[in-house]
Image (cartoon, rainbow, N blue to C red; front, top):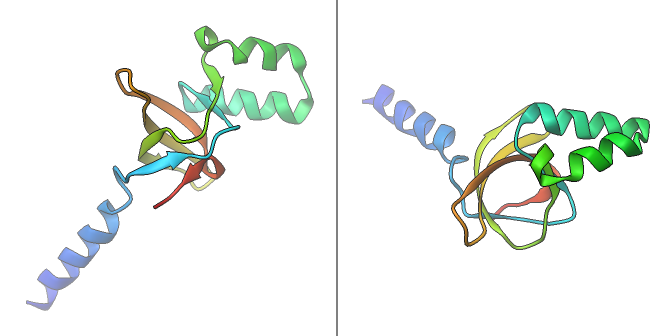
Length: 105
């Protein structure tokens, strides 16, 4: 019986971070892949304006976010990146963004 309680507690803790009704803070970058987000961070650190301009075109993978859009957190990394599904009135889109861009409820 005690093992079942631990299993239920473990499952509740493990899955409680998935699909929360969180929202975007806005003003942060969101990219179609974790690799593109890493490229953005590197370009920002190096002040590489050409790379930032290229990546800023949504066709090339990244966009600056606006506040208030509802998201579901799909995955988090220990480096502070999150994979989210964004609900913006169109079909939902999956992006990677910094953890600071998420307002948790």
